[in-house]
Image: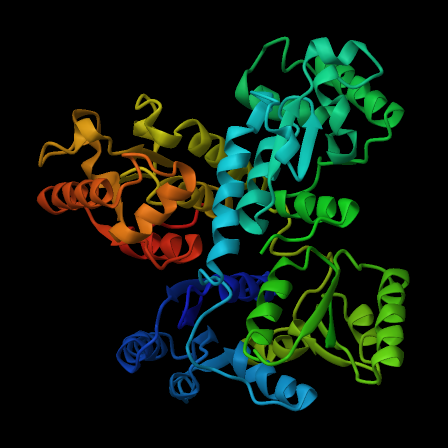
Length: 271
Length: 271
């Protein structure tokens, strides 16, 4: 068991993501994680280091500090001999200064997850409310405002993807569930026809949909493998016939689906 | 204008976050960004490098490649003499191998944003649906299942925070709006009383709330500065009287609020 400390003078969200990406490449090792976000003063850094030092005493092996500390004086404090310190600014800022021929400006401290520009931040909040209010086809009256409308059968992944795109990229996403009545035709439901250019389809493998739906409503017609197969076939027929781009979500995470959509429809992040 | 290329053999989400954190420290420079996610074959890497090279020819300055490519053979391809390459695995994997006394296992390629463990992934999807269904106090019948219930006046930031926590951390978050009828008392609304241990309050400065509400409903009683002041005072009185931890969201982003809440209530990420 090796102790890992995430220390950041801001939220530390990105640092933790990157840290877990690195640590996941050592599947044999076991890690015990502790996080110190908002460590933006010498006192808070010292408090974190006290814990690091204690862990070193107990375990006899130097803990790993994965950090993103913008303030250079605070960052310096993390260079201790009882821990291995991987800091993102240490690693890249110097090389970037050299490449750009300019000094980095490190004050005031604000991170990539700060509020930043107020207008674009408000747009992001609006996008979240928009996407919640336009979830699951409840109404089409705001489809003119949508950046994208996600279409697919029930439980294919429309809602999580919509919400992820809105929360993380400030994109206004509506989503529309293809219901049984929509699936009898080769054409789009009337309500969607004016918005063909904004549509993106999600599909899935039948066994995976069967498993997801069974988790929700076991032993129902809705969750039967046969129902899933028929619905998926009909949905894909519509996508193909109407030239709607679509992708298969079966083995994809929300993040993978979201990035793939943005790649295809060339959506620009709104902030 | 300097060209920046984000190249990743997975989603590249973390890479782009970290890249923007680094580039934001050079406020004088202007950057033109292009992303190549899922660059997981020699052909896709070459396609990206062709663009990098073209940019170098046009601009006469080596573009900056910010990358996270797990596959070592592909990563090697990015070491070109017409670009500056900052790769996260290059930077840290060696040092981590040394610290852990073990070799990194780089196959099969899967990123921190892969689907990973199916059960925990399903829990995350459930958390998103839970949080959407328990937004805005529509019902309290599922409060027993909540990991946390966020409380505060209208437009203080409850919904975006709830959704962020659910989407990114798989936490089941309900939220309850303190309405006028709730604000006359020093005590919690009856509906919340059994859940005191799960509550977290959000507050805000009156001018900021006034501005947010005016954006939504201009020139209404709802958006008046005076209304905002009174509601906020009453809400904070309830929080204090009932010993509900709370924080001020005025200058905080969704990410900052979310991390601060997790710090206070010691919520563990569910995946």
